[in-house]
Amino acid sequence: MNPVDVAGGTDADPGLFATCAEVILQDAGVDLLLTVGMFGGYAERFDTSLGKAEQAAARRLADIAAKTGRPLIVHSVYAGLGTAPLILHAERGATTHQIAAWSGHESLKEVERYTKRVNRRRLLTPSPSVLETGEFF
Image (cartoon, rainbow, N blue to C red; front, side):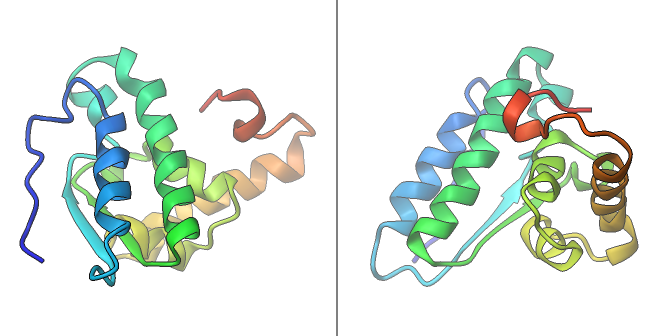
C-alpha cells in the first residue's frame, strides 16, 4: 500500500488519527500500520485543549490494534517528552518493549521512565488508574 499522508489534517482533531488507522487496518491487504509524526505532541505543539482528544485517540489506537490483531506502530517525534498517550499504554500494562515498539523509541532506558513511574505509582498509592479517572500526570 502506498503511504497515506494526513499532515495537517489531524492538527485540530487528533481523533482523526485513530479514524484513519481504523480505516486502513480494516483493509485485509494491510499486514501492519506504521505511522510517523507528531502523535503524542498535539497538546504540546498546538493547544493544550487537544490533550483529552489525543488521549482518547491513544485509547482507540490500542483498541483498534487489539481488535484487528495487526501490528500498529506509532512513531512520535514527541516520544522523549513523556506524553500522556505513552503513559496511557504503561497504565494499560504495556511492557517497556511494547511501548518502545509502539512509539519508535530506540532506547529502552528512555521508555523505562513510563513503566517505572506507573509501577511506582501503583505501589505507593491506592488511587484509581488513569483509565478510571482520565487524569494524567
